Length: 118
Length: 114
Image (cartoon, rainbow over all chains, first blue to last red):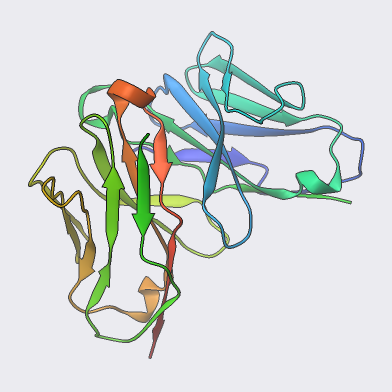
């Protein structure tokens, strides 16, 4: 159990275009999903917290108009990188927790999406 | 605020050696503690966790004990394998103060040689 998927696993796009990344909880309902960004050889940087049916909460310094997050259902959250630029190239990882009993504080991570903006 | 500090890597060991990766934390509340592992090019996998003081988390031969008196959660394994080569992240979650957010350490890269 507790499987989280991401799609696509890898994407290359031209500068100025928008890219959508999907995060799905496959065998549980995720009340909360998180989006992280990871640079090479570094730890994960939390970008935003996404709750189903409400607006995402962004961390300080993260542009909400640049990184659009939609948590449309209890199993799906999407991150759209708008007007992507080369500096947006990174590894994006989502995680989810169900908020139920022993799972409550455990986040389960997706496999990540590598974005390269040319 | 809450924070996690891990020993710096990379750590290089020979197969079957004993592993310790130190992790200490600072928290204002009563956090849960986690170890996650990241293999090259992949996301993070939960390795083990402990939710209260003196709890021991264990999985795949790895262990870590939640020590409130020393604010530590060191990861240990008695005999490492080449397949254990990965980056290990210590993390805490303090739902009362942080809304379930994970605070990560900087990660420790482990390389196990045959």
